[in-house]
Length: 540
Image 1 (cartoon, helix red, strand yellow):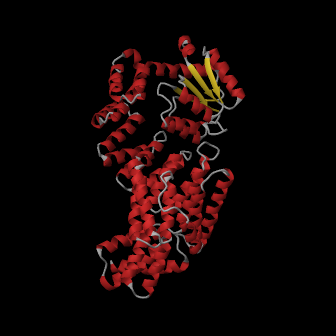
Image 2 (cartoon, helix red, strand yellow; image 1 turned 60 degrees about the horizontal axis):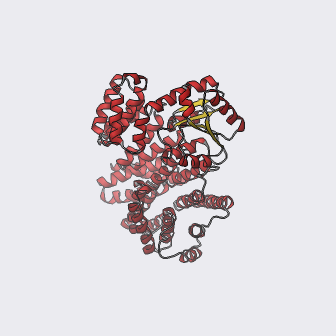
Image 3 (cartoon, rainbow, N blue to C red; image 1 turned 30 degrees about the vertical axis):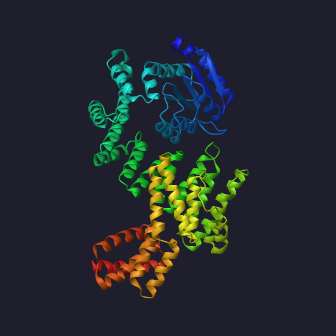
């Protein structure tokens, strides 16, 4: 260890175990470090990092008191509270697959498995701190978002042979800076040149980003799919595939990709939030419900544990129940009530009376107590509350629509859209979803179950056109429901019998069959399906 570098280095140790703190302190002092600060909680770490500069942070991955190392580092990176000039090293006694994926995902400066010797620590710290020191001027520019000058500085750095051991990292940084400076064409050429010499994973991932920026989406997708088979790039590849499909507005494929990423690294809460927005866009209410439950599960016992998480699960359960059969609806109502109870126990002083009132109104509607539900909703304020969370407003809009207060519903949705446009941090996906909600709720005034029941009545009374329209609307809201798909398919078959199969009908038939064969039917429905499918195959 460079004695001068160690002596001037400000160190922060984040570990809740007194013995571990003592050993790290002893090890660092043996290496010449003198300016050492200790904290044992993530909250305390966040506060001190925001207020003071540290050259080195050594953090236990397994913090437990208010949030673990994963969430701490993730938050520091995403809030830009951790400068690039600071070295961040995880330590942990665990080396399980989840931790390995987390380290790949978070990309700290290094990871050190316990137990480690002073010699091990010396070797790792010497390498990391030397790297930070030589690249410090470039990192300072990047921390100020001065990417143009940082790019010039990295170009100059790469001409100095005494820094050759750091060239691979410098090249990676150069590619990132080219993209940050909107030089996608140059970045593409640069990454191709690097890959021709050595196919670094970072270069291939960088090339994907360049191709997406250049709208060379087909080529980007091919490369992403190759990277998805490599363990060290699989997670990032699925994230990129999700982003590419969102760009192409193929929300079904985007949802599939983000769920694959979430399966590999389930603790990433942002992915579950993306899954919620994508599942809402695709009317996949079950996936929305499961993603909301995972947020509660993985946020528990961390600073991300908040009342909104529990209420959002109840809301997602109600959305799911609005499309489910009677038995499943009953189970979903119980689960929604259970999450409300969990919220009330965990946050007894939380003041969210209006939000709970809306949830209760929607639950009463599901239990056919429409008058009581409407009485609750009538107590809500007419004007959207400027301080209310967008999810709170959205739930209120859904309650208004369900109970026939269509103008009030549209007013709230207009307000949500206005705020989304004013504050883009809510994201393009959420805005897409709100715009879809506005269209659907303006065109379709019945709930999914009411639509299906109306369509059945029309069908049984021989009003085929009205039945088809209602079944199509119900299917647009419940594209994963095999019962709805079967009813629509049967109505289409009746029209085909009378008028023949049109091109538009053929496409809808394929979608219905896919939904049915990916779902479950009871014996009576299965028998109906086989007859209808056989007839349509003969008609084609």
